[in-house]
Amino acid sequence: MTGASELLTLRGHGPRRGDSLSNLGLIKDGALLVRDGVIAAVGTRAELEKLPEARGAEKLDLGGRVALPGFVDSHTHLVHAASRAEEYELKIAGASYEEIARKGGGILNSVKKLRATTSEALKKRALAALKQFAAHGTTTVEAKSGYGLDVASELKILRLHKELASEQPLEIASTFLGAHVVPEEYWGKAGGAERYIQLIEQNLLPEIGEKRLAEFCDVFCDRGAFTVEQSKRVLQAGRQWGLAPRLHAEQLSRTGAARLAILMRAASCDHLEQVNKSDIQALGKSDTVATLLPGCDFHLGLRQYAPARALIAAGAIVSLATDYNPGTSPTLSVSMILSLACTQLRMTAAEAIAAATINAAYALRREKSIGSLEVGKQADLAVFEVADYREIPYYFGVNHCWMTVKRGRVIHAPEQAAN
Ligand SMILES: [Zn+2]
Image (cartoon, rainbow, N blue to C red; front, side):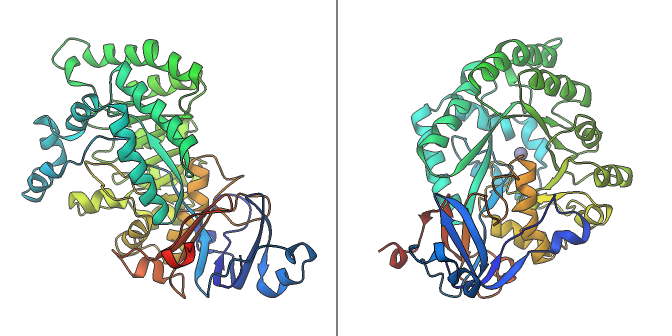
């Protein structure tokens, strides 16, 4: 692949913290040599043309566009049955997320719909979404369960993750989020949450662990969901079955979830709108990625975004993701998230791109295979119809992704390029 006006390699060791977050490893007039889906050489066009092994290679001209590692979307609720457009107007009229949840809306609304939907219908919807992810430059997607909340329905989602991973080109990291919220059938009963956690420990995790249906275990640790103690118990149980922890933390209220994530060496803690100064310092010293989800605040019309600048200054490994889900962030466009990161989180375009590629790969513990364009890594690329990388977040609300490549294979291309 040759003729990239700017090739953002994101090369270098370790996750990006502080000032290094804005180092894109940019090569002007860049080129890549790919063999068997893996990057064999990276450099300027002139450097690569000199390589003997490049001579017989099939040439793909990027026509002066900007190329970067495919986006790694490290937080999505991929499998769901339907939108929740009916709640949108309630939100606009001023009902809070929690008020809607108390009325049987929110997550439980999605649970009702998912339980009543066949696996085939869910699959069709997820496949259409994955196609859109690819069309927007994303090459790896994390996917959470959590809209099933009973044994059959949670397993239905996790089995779908596995099927989807093998039947379409995007890579899928499967996460078990059985502890999303306490399901309605346990409400108003003594020890309801406790009994539901027992179901997770005794009926769900053994099956998930044995069949390897998930890599990660996540908990929604917040007011109205699970406490820090309950979250710890679920994450520990998950770890016993080989599932690495990650957490929904400090979104609606500060609970101490970020501290729990650090204590448990979680891969990532996500949201973080409500973190305090000492949490920020602690995240700065930890290897747990701080994943920010500004699409959620934007969609809910909230004024308080996560303190990205303070987290970056403290040295935290800041990442960005869409939180694609029907209730709070119905977008699968990482470039839209980059626009929000720039305008609302005050991140620079370079910081936002590093957060959504190499640091997101750390959040999924895939930094050895994806997240940057370096020799030995998968040839996962997004090519944008722009001449300057800053135009990717600058043009908000428009998809300028021109081509997407996964493991060296073109998986999205404009019609003229596909012909
Ligand atoms: Zn989420």
